[in-house]
Structures are given as structure tokens and as C-alpha cells.
Image 1 (tube, rainbow, N blue to C red):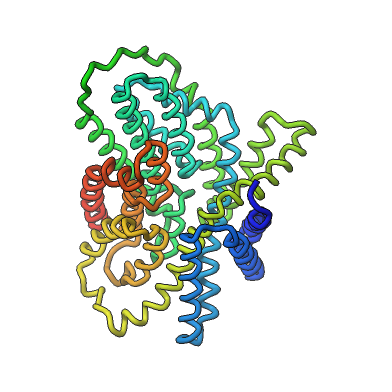
Image 2: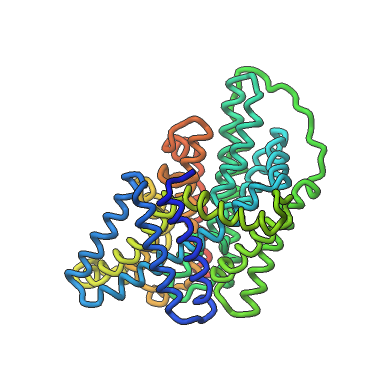
Length: 465
């Protein structure tokens, strides 16, 4: 069990989610302030047992508050805004984690993953990358843990070490690339939530069609590269029995869950006008609880099972995510405070970015985000810090959707290459290699190819919008 301080922090984090939902529907600011206070308390408790690398982010955040207090009279409001920005990211993460915790307890979902991992070589990559995409919509990078673990399980029985190594690598990068392609468009992803916040005039319904093209490009290019550059083995591959199970039947539980989640989110969005991200954090925990109720109950009945699992989620799951929660919260906080402090400095002493051609800025966003990921800058931090320093889409003369395409595309590439992201760290651990090797050696050519394709797509979309 996590330490008592982390368990209390998990309870506070779960309560913060409940306090964040009413403001999405127009409730007064008291709820938002309550959520901020709960998360500050949770962050303080999590910090008691956090690693030094996470505490460094907390120290940077406190330093920025001190800088703001010493130089700006309105620092209090800016700090509150930064707390709300970080808190919004955490409450969305909490809502999605609730669904992930419910999903991984379902035998039907595990069977879906095993079915994908059993596919023969001719269609295994495409099956796993599409599966990684579908699972990633619900489980975020938990899809890599689930499918990657099943991939490692399926290859463990292979006696040929060379074949096992190549097969595991190809399966893991297929899953990782499928997950990363969700970053381009998923309304349940942190990338869309942050992009909608920092890009003036951005709207997910307007952007989703264009962002889906980005996702399709990433999936297609990955499959093409895997087909073109198959490893040369020293011995012939032994024949494998073809998979005869029905695809629709095997994937039905996952597809039903996706339909329920996405349909409920859109229904609430259309019925109330609440933002898509607000609809996600409202609907998803309810679906997670409903799913828990239909799973086989523990002793004491379904109500007791639901209460026990809610308690476990707060005190075990969220407490176990304390490192990620600190990192995500502080990335949003630092980005908000840092950009607020830097904007007037840039306006007074920095270069006039408005004088740069809009296509150059859009293309740069695709590449800068993954490049900063190589030096340890989380995409949330990079986007929250850098995008507010740029001219608004209106000043650039481009549609806000064009900037959203560039941001989410660069974010997705960073999710495949940055050795500091959870997805790359998980793939490296499952593959038995260093994270930087998994990011740049396994995905280096893929990143260059998709970066070039996404750059061209962003520039084309900017002319179409």
C-alpha cells in the first residue's frame, strides 16, 4: 500500500474532480477555488514521498511565484489562473484514470488485447497499431502497459532469441505509435485539452476532422515503414497457424465501450453546450462506476463492491500515480506562470514574432515540441509555455485549427521519441532497452518521416481553412 500521506492525497485529488465539474456548467467560482485548494493539499502530501526529479518541478513553480510576487502587482490572480490550469489537467487525468482502472479489471478487454497480440506477422503490426489507437482512446498510455504486457507475454514462449527480439520490438512500436496517434485528435487526451486552452478561438468540433487526417497519416506511415524495413533474420521464420476468430466478435466489448463513451460525451456537449473536455470529466467517471457495477461483484453485493473500488481508486491508484500527478500539474502551472512572466519581456526586448511568416511558425511548432522533449520538457510544459508567446492566430492571419493541427502533431511525435514521456519509458522497460534507444533508435526514422508529412499537411490545411 502507498504511504498514508499519498493515500490522503489521492482522496483529495478525487474530491477535486467532483469540485471541478460544477464550474463546467456555469457554477460560481467557489467550486474552482475549492478544487485548487484540494489539489494544492494533495500536491503537498504527494511531495512528501516524491522523487527528487519531481520535486525539482515543484521548486521551479515556487520560484516562479516568488519572481511574480517580487515584480508584478497582479501576481495573485496569475497564480490562481496557473493553479486552475494545472488543476484542470489533473482532474481530466483523474477522470480518465477512473475509466482505465475499471477497464483493466474486465476479462473481455484483456481478451481483446490477447486477440490482437496473437495476429500472424502479415497483419500483426496493423492490428496492434489500430488496437493501440482504440485502447489509447480509453486507457491513455495505460494502453501501452496493457497491450505491451500482452505482447511480451506472447513472445516469451518464442525459443529463437533473435526472432523474439525483433518481434517484440515491432509489436511494441506498433502499440506505441497507435497510442501516440490518438494525441492528434482525441477529446479525451491532454493534448486537445491544453491546445483548446492556449490557442485563441480554437474549437474541437472545427478541428477534429483535420486532426483525424494527422492521425491517419501517422498510422499509415508507421505501417508502411514496418512493411518496407522488415528485419533480415539469420533463419527462416517458422510457420504460424492463422488466427480464425471473428474480428468483430473479439473487439465488440472495446467497440461498445468506445461507442458509449464518445456518444455520451457528444450527447452532453450538444445538449448543454458544455465544452467537450468538461463533458469528458463529467461523463467518464459515471461510465467507470456503471462498468464497475456490471462486473462480477465481490462479497457484500454490487453497492459494496462499488464503494470498495472507489476507495481503492482514490487510495491506491491515484496514490500510485502521485509522481505523474506532480509532473502533470506542475507542467501546466509552470507553463502558465512562465508564459505570463515572459510575454511582457518578449514584447519589450524580444524579436517581433508577428513579423515571421505564418507558415514558418506553423511548421516550427511541429518540430519544436518534439525537440524540447529531448531535453526533458514535457509537451504540456512546452505548449503551455511557448504558444502564449506567439502571436494569436488572428494576428498571424491563420485559422486557429491550423495551429491546433501543428501543436497536436508535434505533441504526438514527442510521444514517440522523448525519453522523458511515460509512453517511451514504458516501451523501453517492456523492450529491455534504454528509453532514449526506444525513442530515437526505434522511432527516429518514423519521427522524421511523420514530421515531414505533418508539416506539409499543416501548411496545406492552413491554405484550405
